[in-house]
Each structure stands twice: as structure tokens, then as C-alpha cells.
Image (cartoon, rainbow, N blue to C red; front, side, top):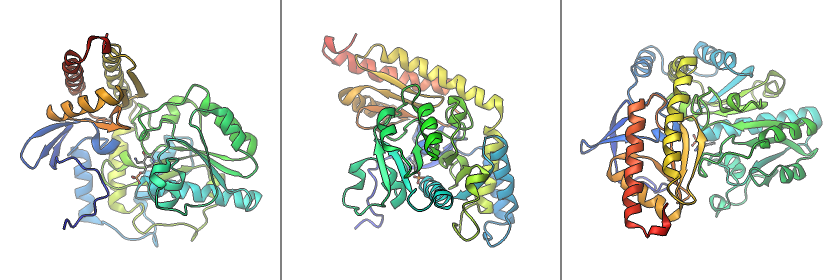
Length: 396
Ligand code: PMP
């Protein structure tokens, strides 16, 4: 019997080492990592500043407790608040925990200001917010709820991108609207223009908090420290995780003082959240990522990748390219996508197949322009080889 529970659909590859944008497996084979731990290895593998920061902090102090002041937490929180529109940060260890904290913050704020009737959280079809009960209930994908009932009460759902439907579900009972500015897990879906602006207006009208789940889109991924900064809609709070620790488990909720004040001492917490080792990693990541020149280079590399993918998509009927910065999806359809994915694996370029029809790309933010071109060549090679084998009407 295998000792590890089989909760994942795993590929057979076993990476044991990493350098920059490359992973090396048990057999010594090298792979170009174009998924980066699902948007998590923001600085790639073995980044000297991150490795040094972890080593140094491990020798000093790994963990103490939130019973005491943690100066590094204060420092990282300041780095985050100075670079965003928020005043306060709560640290946890993962994306789903950051979602839990954001929901608790919103509900308690609503409870304090309007009473217990105002507790509903509105989320959107196809969303992904995590696997703990709150995050899972917020995740509007029935297949992921299967067999886990009863879910948490007080959630409502609307189709992603449909402002009218959202409008009909928001009311005095709504404490928060929780939305991904780009849906990552369900295929890098961008909402139609005006959707996020519309949600902002609806939330303002009904006194609900607008929370962006930036677990996947945050920490430079879209070419801005947080995606909302590139979109121009300022939410009341954001969740962050994945890239924040560069691979070390770090999660966070960023909120405005007037809402954050609802989480009074003793109302929420985490043993590990914001411990010195995690904070040393987050500080090292943020020192690199929040630099304007670094973010500009992410946007440039993202544009090179997106343009290359668009050229490719133009040759495949129905194909689409979506996303921003270095979070991109190439939808090729249920026939072509799995085949191209298989060929990428053969060619040792790691991407992720979502929904059976879209290749998701989220390389390290430190990926080189040459590596971007290398990956594009592989995708092109895969599509061309399959085009040659396909009937003439399937391609243009
Ligand atoms: N929210 C979003 C938008 C995510 O993409 C994810 C992870 N894919 C999560 C929450 C959950 O994060 P974690 O796996 O760290 O709990």
C-alpha cells in the first residue's frame, strides 16, 4: 500500500533539484519549468537572495510564536502596505487560509456594523478559492463539493462575468463579494470589460466588501505587484499566497484599517502564520518583485509570450489566448490541447493542462527572454506536428 494518500492526479516526473527556470528529475533529466509550482516559485529555483535569506534566518530563529511581537512580520506588512492601497496585513500559510481570513474579516465587519443578517458571501461560477470548508464552499464548482456536504452556509453564486446576475444576487444580506480578477484554475479566464468596475459599484451601493482573491494573480504575476493595480479597480481587501514566499508557505490578507479593525485580538490566528522563517522568505521575494524595473520586465516577457501564442492561435480554428503578464492560457480545444501537452512533456517543457482544453503557463517571473522563446518554439513545434497529422479543414 502506498503511504501517501492519493488526492492528486500526479504525473510520473519526480523533480528533486531546481536551478533558475529549470527542474532536474531523479534521473538527471532537465525540464523547463513553465508552471513554477503553479505560480509559486516566483523567483525560480535556487534564487541566491531567497536561499541566503532562508539560510540566514534558519540559523537565527525559525519560529517563536504570535504570543510575541514578530519584527519581521511588521517589516513585511509595511512592504506590502506601502506598495498597495491597504493598511493592515494578517499572515497565514496558504491561499485557502487567506480566503478563510478574508471571509471572517468581512463577516465580522458586517456583523459589527449592520448585524448578523448581513453575512452572505457572493462568489462566481468556475472560481477556485481553496480546499478548506470556507474556501471550498466559496469555490463555485459543484464537482469539487461532491460528497463533502454539508457545505458552509451563507454563500451565493453568480455566473462569472455576468453583472446583471450579480446585481440580482447582491442585497442588504451581502457581507462580501469574493472574486478572482482573472480565474486561474478554470483556464485563465478574464472577465468582460466593466465587470470588476460594476462589482465595485454594486458593493459600494450595498455596503458589501469587494475582495479580490489574488492568490494566483498576485506578487508580480500579471506584471503589477497585484493585478488590481493594472486593472484600476481598487477592492477593499485582497488575498495573497503562492508567489509571496517564493515556495515557502506564506499567505496573507491585506485590508483597510476600517475593516481590519473587526479582527480584534483573540478573534483569529495561526500558529505558524507569519513566522520568522516565512517572513524572511517573503521579504527576500518582495525586495526583488516590487522593483518597478522587475515588474516592467515581467510585462515585456509576458508580451513576448502572448504575441507568440497569438500567432500560434491564429493558425488553429477556435484557439484563444487569455491572461496578463506571465499568467497566460492557450485554449486549443479538447482534441489538440492534450496532444500538445503530451508533446511538451516529451520535449521537457512543463505546462499545465486545465479543463482538458487549455494550456496554462506561469513560468518563474525571473524566466529569461530566451527561455520564453524556447518554450514558444516547443509549443509551435507541437502544434505544427499535430497540424500535419490533422485533416486539412481543421487548420488554417
Ligand atoms: N485562491 C486561488 C485564486 C487559487 O488559485 C488557489 C490555489 N490554486 C487558492 C486560492 C488556494 O491556495 P492554496 O492551495 O495555497 O490553499
